[in-house]
Image (cartoon, rainbow, N blue to C red; front, side):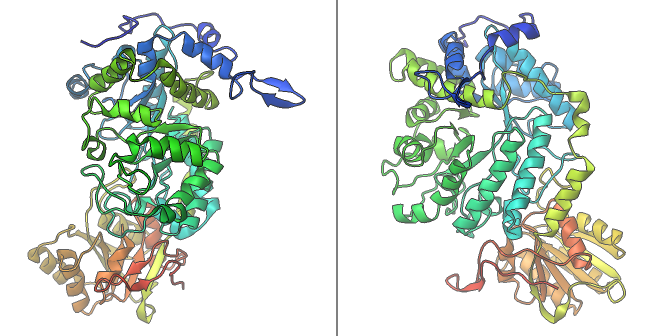
Length: 614
C-alpha cells in the first residue's frame, strides 16, 4: 500500500492561474539595496525566504516526493497506449504519468525514447504540459522538473525533427568553444520549447582509457584542459537558453574498463592525479555556474577508502564537491537502477545513503515504492532529519525558480515548430559537423574522391544500434549522401561481426565498382570487421575507412590507405563525412584522444592533435 500525505487521487480541480501564481508569489523577488540584489537576513540567496515558506507548508510525504526524478511510460500524461499502461502498472504501480505525480508527488520526471516519451516535438510538449497540469492540480502542487539525456552523438533521447549535433568527442575534435556554446544554446532552446528544463549533459569525464565501455566518445577527449574549456562553454550555452546543464559523472568516470550499468568500476587514480586530470572539468563547470552535477557509481579509493560508490560517499560529495570545489547547486544521482550503485547495498538503503552523502535528486530507482518509503521511514525513525530533506528541496526549488518553472510551467505546444528543427539550427549543426571530421591517414592522396575517376562506389560496413539521430545504418546514410553529391553509391550492410559468407559477398561486389567506402565500428584484432577490410583492400580497389565510433579502429587496420573518424554514426556526422570524401569541404578535425599502437599500447601511433587536411 502506498503511503501519501494528501489522500489525493489526481481528481482535484485544476487551480486557476491566479491561485498558482498566488502560491508562488514573491518566489523570485529580491531586496534591492544600492542597485544590487540581496537575500533577506538569514537566507542564503535571494528568494530563499519565499521558497522556505513553500517548504514549510509541505507534508513530509510531499517533501520525500520532491527528491525523486522518475521514469514513466507513455506519450501522454493521461492517455498512454495500453502497453505503456501495463508497463507502468508493473514497474511503478500506477497507470499514467498523471497518477505518478498524484501518488508520489515526484519533483522530477525523466524522458526516455524506449519509454515512448519522445515521439515528436509537439507530442513531447503536450506530454510536458500534461505532467505539469497533473502536478499543479494537487494540493500545494509544484511544477515538475522534466529532464532527459540529450548529449548528442551516441546518446540522444529526442530525435528528428529536432536538431541533432555531433557528440562530445566530435566537438572535442573540432576544438571550438564557440561551437560547443552554440550547441548548448540551440539544443537548450529546443528542449525548453518542449518543456524539458534539465539536460543531463555535458559529460565532463576525461576519457583516458581506450577500453572504456561506457564513456568513450561521450567525452570531449583526453586532455583535461581542453575538456574543461568545452564543458564550460556548453554549460554556458544551455543555461543561457534557460535549461539546466548537468556535469557528469563526478568525480570522474573516464578511466574504467567496466560499465557501471552492469558492474562496479574502480578508479585507481591517486589523489594527485585526480586533481590534475579528473577534477579539472568539474572545477570549470562549477566556475561556469553549472546548475546540476551528476554522481558516478564508481569506487574511488584515493578519495574515499570505504569501498562505497561515489554516489553514496559523503567524503566525495559533501567533503570534496561541496566543500573543496565550493559547489552549492543540485546534485543528482546517476540512475539508481544501475548495478554500480546496487552491488554493496539493497535498493531500500541506496536512496537513504545517497541523501546522507549529500545528494539532492534521486534518479530513476528500480522501485519507486521501495525507495520512496525507505526515505520516509528513515525520517520517521530519525536516521534522516526533516531539515536535511529541506536542505535538498531548497536547492531543487531554487533551480525550478531560476528556470522560470514556478512562474510559467507550461509551453506553447502549438508553436513548438517555430523553435525545434528550424533551418538555421540544422544549418548550424551541419557546419559544426564539418569542422569535426578528422582525416587520420591519406596515403597517395586518395581523398578526396573524384566523380570522374571514382564514379561508382560501394559503401559497406557495420550496422550498430541506431541512436535517435539516425535514419538507418551508416552504410545507407553514407550511400544516400554520396549519391546526392554526384556519385553512384550502393549500400551493402555487413554488420559488426560479418561472417565469411558476408565478407565474400562484399568482396565480389567490390570488384564491380571504382572505390569502396567501409564504415567500421569498434574493430578489434582478429575480428570479422578486420577481415572484411583486409579482404577489400586485397581486391586492389581503393578503400576508404570511416571509423564511425571510436577513432582507435585505425590501429588494427594497417593496410588502409585512407581513414576518417566521425566519432559517432548519427546522420549529421555521416553527411559531413560524405562531403569530406567528395571534397566539398576539407577535413578540419584533430584527434582529441591519442591512438596507441595495437601491438604495443605504450607507443602512440597518432597523438592528440593529429589530423590531416587537403
